[in-house]
Image (cartoon, rainbow, N blue to C red; front, side, top):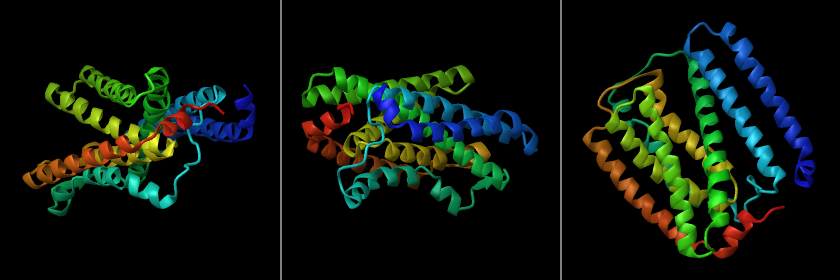
Length: 265
């Protein structure tokens, strides 16, 4: 509880803001916007942010610094996240967009709400899968390179398999298993980013951007022939280079990188 008292003012401030957001989402949102999607986005965003905040309070109370100040320079952090940033940007249907095969049919305010919705998904899922599950697995894994690799793979596998629940909402089998596969890879990449930076802010923002670029036209409009030949070839090339880059980063991680991540304040 000493850790909770240490951050009491910050937690109360953000807690108050989130409660206002939740109130707005559940009570006011449905009366402000006429389109049916906006209240749903506001409601879901509010609930995710509130749940994520409660989980952060629990982790802070136990002494885990989920948002620690990075010990490396801003330039090194930028170099570290550039490949993940490229992956997120490439998730946007670039070829289809420039060839005018995309249509955005929702108003601008819904686009903003969707961006916040993506942020809330990245926020909650990174808190759960990197901030809690990855930390728990690293804490219990053998303090060896192989043990830590298994912890990263384990957390990424759980993150990927959770997407099987999309089958219950009518998603296609092929699309769902494809999502499980690339979610595993993304989860492993974001885990390495978190371990290297010691701050969940970076995987949260990368996750949110990845979701936004990949879903914006699927949720708010239409896209035709998203995965054309050029897109597939570019995506495969970026994926292979990115995997190689983050494997290299993982191999360069030292024991004290993990110790600082697991060390309770």
